[in-house]
Amino acid sequence: MFRTGNLKKIFELLDETQKTYPEFSPEERLLLYRMSFYMESFEETRKAVLQAAVLKPGEGGRKALLEQYAQSLPESPNEEAAQLEHYIFQLQLMCHEQDKAIEILEQILKLNDNRDYDLIFTEAEGARTGKRRIGEENGRTR
Image 1 (cartoon, helix red, strand yellow):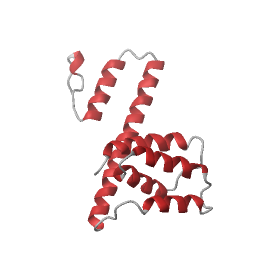
Image 2 (spheres, rainbow, N blue to C red):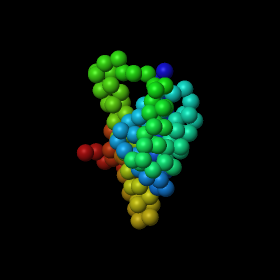
Image 3 (tube, rainbow, N blue to C red):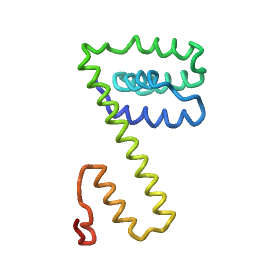
Image 4 (tube, helix red, strand yellow):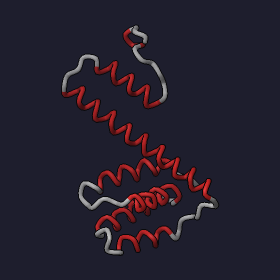
């Protein structure tokens, strides 16, 4: 029914495609989020992204292709359901962006040979998972 795991996949795929192809508009991204959320197979969403990515935005081909895929998606029964859907997408996107930021921080700390890397990473990981264990490893508390 709902595939929140596919949302992470679509965010990663869109990150990769924007390195090579023109970026998708916010409306196109929303449609792609909906596709990944509702479609049985992520491969169909992946196919749509790759097909649309090679088309130039604004020439109508990309829009027509995505609208064709959109016809197979269920309609939101009311405004509240659509808002809830958008909330889920935004929450998942924020988690994806937070994961990317943590990875960048981890790389920076490794490059700088930061001796407190393990402590900082444990704190960041705890923040990501919702656990607050700040300073426990070294017996420090706030």
